[in-house]
Amino acid sequence: MADRRLLAFYTVARLLSFTKAAESLHMTQPAITFQIRQLEEYFNTRLFDRTHSRITLTEVGEQVYKYTKKILELYTRMEDTVKEITGEISGILMIGASSTIAEYLLPVLLGDFKLKYPEIHIQLSVSNISGIVSMIENNEIDFGLVEGPVANKSLAVELCRMDQLVAIVPWGHPLTEYDEVLVQQLMDYPYISREKGSGTREVIIEYFNQADLSFHDLNIVMELGSIEAIKGAVASGMGVSILSRAAIQKDLQLGMVKELNLNPPLERPFSFVYQKQKFRLQAIEKLLKFLHNYCGVYTEDWEMEKDNLSVEDES
Image 1 (spheres, rainbow, N blue to C red):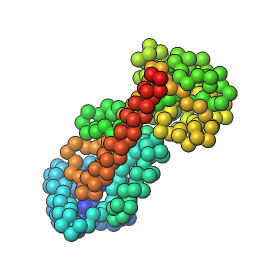
Image 2 (cartoon, one colour; image 1 turned 30 degrees about the vertical axis):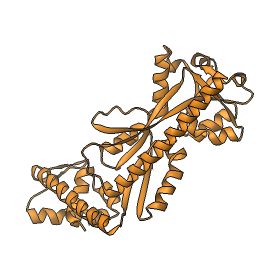
Image 3 (spheres, rainbow, N blue to C red; image 1 turned 90 degrees about the vertical axis):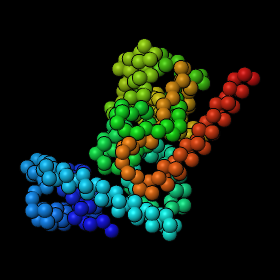
Image 4 (cartoon, one colour; image 1 turned 180 degrees about the vertical axis):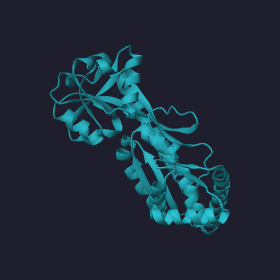
């Protein structure tokens, strides 16, 4: 319902790119340019300074952007209020998730969410933690789900659950006779690592630092950007690795690899990340509430599992 000129202007100003704005609004770039030109003719002034490599807002453009943001938020609030009264919840949600969460936790969760809210359409971007944070900072997604700590203190971070990381080795490996491995023992074998920028890699680097060891002293024979690729490489006997327990359940059931608890244990947070001051659509609120409910279930299951392990240890 919002004025197409204002919507086009706001999207270009937010992304500072006509191309990205056209993709975001599912419009052609000439159509975006036409809407901006109409708005500039209406105000009889330029809203953007254009160079060959980039665009920036003019002084007038900065003021128009400030008011446009408030106007569009009011439009959204009005539509949400009407939808809440009429019982209709719809919209497009752009979310991002790091690979472990996207591949092993979200599929079932989003399937259940879609059954409950069929009119809400979700667009999922998968990246490493630095990529997700960057997309949130640049307003390219509404919120993200990441594995590991977030360095940007200006973003809101809410804990979902704790994730346990474990060592995995191929069957026939010397370590398969154990159920637990000291972190120092992993230094003796070829190691398969996640790529730079991966949340898993950053957590493991910090884990080694806390053990007064250097991650770079590992015998890293491969750096792979896919969890599935790492599991396949380990299963084929090319080395050992450390991965999320959530990512290896099917592989354990199929007997592809063996899981070894790390000593000391290694955990990391699964968290929601979003901009603190950003107005949220009702559809976003519904998904966040849905995710929080799932996090509670996962946390309860994990606490039960830890309690069961403790009982077994005592016996």
